[in-house]
Image (cartoon, rainbow over all chains, first blue to last red; front, side, top):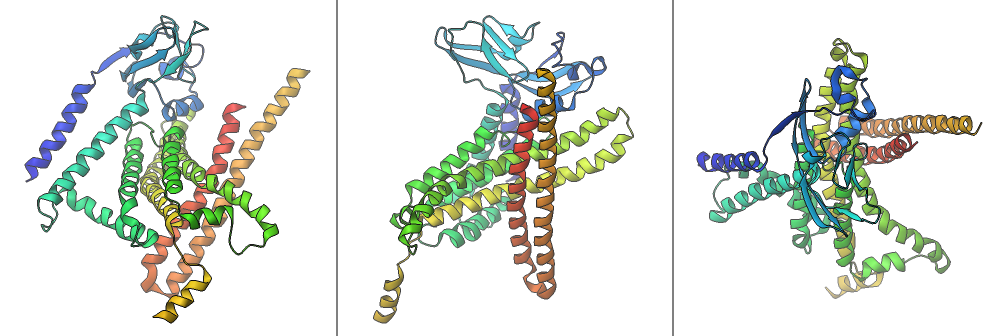
Amino acid sequence: MMGRYRNKFSIIGLIIFLFFSFSTFAEEHKAEGEHEIVEGEKGEFNPGEMITHHIMDSHEWHFATIGHHHYSIPLPVILYSNTNGLVVFSSSQFHNENHSYGNYHLDHATEKIHSSNHEECLYDISITKNVASLLLSALLLVVIFISIGNAYKKDAARAPKGIQSFFEPIIIFIRDDVARNIIGEKHYKKYLPYLLTVFFFIWFNNMLGLIPGGANLTGNIAVTMTLAVITFLITSFSGNKYYWGHIFNTPGVPFVLKFLIVPIEIVGLFTKPFSLMVRLFANITAGHIIILSLLGLIFIFENVFASLISLPFAIFMSFLELFVALLQAYIFTLLSAMYFSAAVEEHEHNGHDVDKALMM
Amino acid sequence: MFNSLFLVELGYAFMGAGIGAGIAALGAGVGIGRIGGSAVESIARQPSESGKIQTAMLIAAAFIEGVALFAVVVCLLISFKA
């Protein structure tokens, strides 16, 4: 029994190990001021640059810097340009004097690739650190939940064991306390797959971002924007006429006030997913920045005794961030469920309830 | 002269970012403090409901923190763009 689960994890580990080939190299170049941090004692410590480097996306997956060696995996750069078509190369090609390969120049401050040919219009669809982390976490989610589903399919009445016993209470919690309570018995089943997916996706990615050497995926506003847009689309497409009626023709409001209320409702239609996006992004990114700043304090003071103060704080903040990871996933799911329930809510308007009661 | 004017406004931008973040922290502190206070009070009044009250407190705190972090994001944008 345990052997089966151990095999699955060893397969995942093997895939991760074989998929990337490790390359270690020492940074020889010295850009104007941008890479002074990675030179160790050669340059001054720039905390802002260190923090930005850890928060932002990057074309290579940097794990650690020991002495002057950087342990990082260069990720493929995939560019589509209108003059050269699809161009694929490894980002280790950028490790030369001026960060350029052929026409293409990598700007380390913003991690953007520019072309020196002015007529060339580049679409950057590379596998960056965030994309690679997204693919890995998607793989992890698929493996875990398909194994849970299979275990359930084989014998639904058997007491859960292993991974299933850990995730089943959480899945039931989302199904009962979030979906069923909020959306209601009639419609909750339609939205349950999306709510479960979004909860575990955000939770797993938040956690993966917290391990050292992990990618800050949910701190990327494009990712949170996508999740918020999907919630918005699902809400809009499942809105019934009461929902749209409340927005464009709010009942119970005198006619003159409708000119004021309707624009506010329309703006509210867009601010709700916007707040979902910014809340998740800001919480995760702020958490990372706080921990990095606390650890950077040690380097600013250049004194090992500063670690006596900043390490306990950093550890405490890390625990808080673990909690925030779960809480933010739960809040996103909860709010999405509330928006769905507002969209599918059906209520008879004032007269009919009384009639029904009388007819009983 | 133009240069020094620009630098003065740059200083104001950074100052504004710092003050904004501080006010956001203040607002979050006041809000979450009030939630925590009323939650603890209601747990004292009815200890058997403490589970539900705790859950509601955490959810409300997360919302308020979200709003404070909107302000923090704006301040970060100012300090990185200025």
